[in-house]
View (cartoon, rainbow, N blue to C red):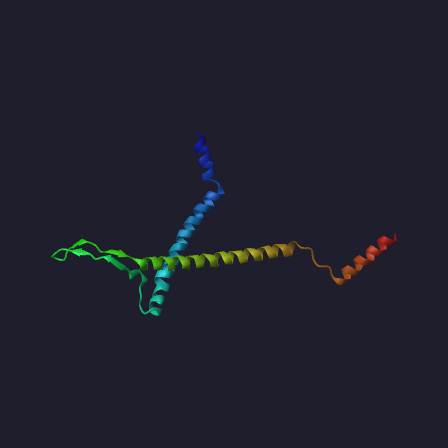
Length: 143
């Protein structure tokens, strides 16, 4: 029973729940970025590169085998380097979007810290306050 109790403690801790939420949000974010890449960015890149579709790029290592009637016996063995290029592009774009999101959060945290520090710092004394403090100190030293 001790293992079950330890597991239950572990599973309901805040860190595990935070991690689960992060995985779900990360999956949704990945879908958004994948859609951005496939539906927006890749068509633009295709226009810029003259209609090149990376996903279709491959090297045929062994041709497909057909029988006398043209029926496929064995499919072609291909090296699909276009899919790899597409995956690299997806990764770079996802990493860039995550970088931008983290950077924005860091800026918000810095502004929050600056505001907190500014509100907790004592106010800067005016010239009159400085002069009155000097007079007070002089009077204390004379008595």
